Length: 321
Image 1 (cartoon, rainbow, N blue to C red):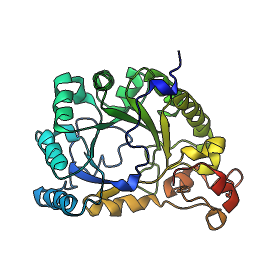
Image 2 (cartoon, rainbow, N blue to C red):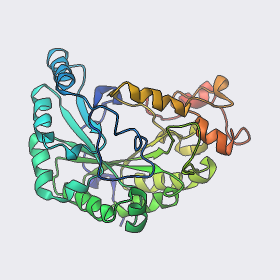
Image 3 (cartoon, rainbow, N blue to C red):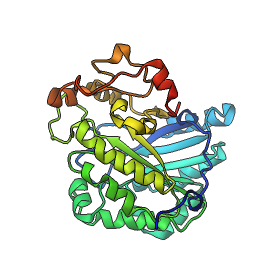
């Protein structure tokens, strides 16, 4: 039976924007090796925020209250033994929400979930790569990771005051399973938001052949969006040509919180070459990132299928602004 809107927990963040959050990278180690990981080859030299940087951010929050929420991220933050202590410090500094980004494996331990929640974590942003164990574990390159992540998501559903968000990266390996991911997670009581981030390599070439042609991926994205919304879930799509989403164009949201990260990351990131499109100069979209360099080098610019928005067309979309 499909879940009705009334069956999904109320979203306490309604009206809160991405800009109301600040994101701090506190750890650059991971016990998975996801094939699509953008920092897989750089996490060994990226430096997480040190105590001075953490305390400076907390003091800024104490004094000025510029944000409502703090996102703790990096690689796999649950590998930090002092994660709960950091969360408590953030709450004491005046953050209303603390979110952790995680692959969810350690959440298979219900007592650990409770530890984080008791410390003040209210949101968990959990990565799930596919709808079945074989494919998920192939992507993460760690056997048993799917089972633990699913157990973690199930454990979180036992805590009614916690919100769960999921993210699935859209790659040549995963795109066909997007609707099945939504279906697989349909009974999670506190899953209120699902993200689908289109893969981009930190390079000008798709060396791993993980990019998937946008027109092909679009059909599976649309099915996933339709299904997720039928269960009352909010959906955000990242890094996908907005015009190819058709009537689901409102799902595209490339807004991001302020990210505090090792500055060397940005040198790598900008190799992606975002904001390229044959129609960039005439398109009114404020969310679309166009086509990145690696994708264009492999699949071209799609001049025959992309369609620039006029100002009136874009303004008529019920998009996140």
